Amino acid sequence: MSSLQGPNNFTNDGSAVIDRTIEVRSKKLAKSIQELDHIYEIERTVEMIMSGGYERIALQFPDDLLADSVEVTTVLRDRTQKKIFVLADTSYGSCCVDEVAAQHASAECIIHYGRSCLSPTSRLPVLYVFGKHPIDIDHCLEVFDNLFGQDNTIKIIIMYDVVYSYCIDKFVHKVQTDLKYTNVIQSFVKTDCNISQELKDMDNPQLNGRYYKLFEGTSIESYTIFYIGGESSTLVNVLMTCNKCKVYSYNPETRIGRQETLPKNQSFYMVQKAKDADVIGIVVGTLGVAYYLEIISHLKKLIIHAGKKPYTFVMGKLNVAKMANFMEIDCFVLVSCPENSLLDSKEFYRPIVTPFELEIALNPSKQWTGEYITDFQQLLSDANIDEIDFQPENEDEPHFSLVTGKFKQNRRYAFKDSSQDDTINNVTDLTLRNKHTSISTMLNSAAGEYLNSRTFRGLEQKIGETAVEIAEEGRTGIARGYADEQCLCPDT
Image (cartoon, rainbow, N blue to C red):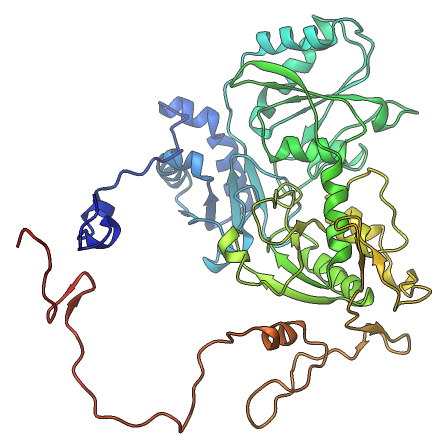
């Protein structure tokens, strides 16, 4: 029940915040030192630290494994006598190696724990320790046989969440020997920044960090994928990049196996939204994945050559409120690891697309075929802006928007100058203002145009227009009841 004193949020003395209980998702996986050694691969970690001669080692834990971080750090310090510390909350997704935070602490290497997107790094040596989540292999085999039991000659690729990588060799062996499946291929993941010769001899990884060797004369489209793991960004990445394959999954936690499906029209819709946009924001969602600087530079060139206006943002973890501060942006493109870039932007005020979707939208030489690319390196290898003809037959003609069902006249902010290398004419970071400090001339400034159209543009200084007055003593107390106010509560 409300009172004259106002809502409870403003009338309490702060004790509710202090006494509030916070539910933490982290739970201990190891109940003893023996389990700790087994789950977190202490022996392999110590060997890597000692053989590399590292003195300062950073440990990166996701939120769900922080409960074991103290014990792991203590054991590693005792066995190596090195300077070992745990990184604080990462600026971006916990699946990415936070090389920037580690370098701030002068770390010489990183031990990354838990789930990982396996994106290539470029600064520090990394050791991946995925952890060993429990799984009932016999039940998984039973579900596998129920899904594919009618044909044991079907070509199948076994993929998995990295937290189950420790048991995949055993699982694949049982599938081939006990169930008699003859065309099963096992995928492999890298466990450190160095790629073994065995992995190098395989095909290029179709998913970052995941390697497999197909049967001779076959393509990925002729295979069925069996994925071990729960619903996650990893599974979504598999579904997107292998969208021409049937995908079945088994969740070890729920013990359920099923065929996975993914809406196919959403990506095409996002492509059309990016095509309609005039001002595009490049959101940097990673500072650790290799080639992130190259893909940002590529996207800038692509946007400018298409006659649109780019702005670059570095804002860590995204949320709706944070992104809503930039209403002049028509569309955002998120530069992040393959798993974090697949962001559901339904709740955001502006669409957020992936670099591949933006490439399809703005590159006239690219057509939507259903193929999907999330790897920076693969996207960059297929792109050569200098060979693209961006000039339409009549650039003043509007284009038909498949989103609105109407013709849209694009606002062209720039054009390419072929006489200069990587130079764009008519682009400036400055906006001319007249002596009255109001915006008078716009030189390709999308933000300036938006500001000029707003009725509220922030606080005005009004220098010389405000009368000077003698300073007075202000109020004392708190907002719910200042010292000079009279309480109107009936019980006082």
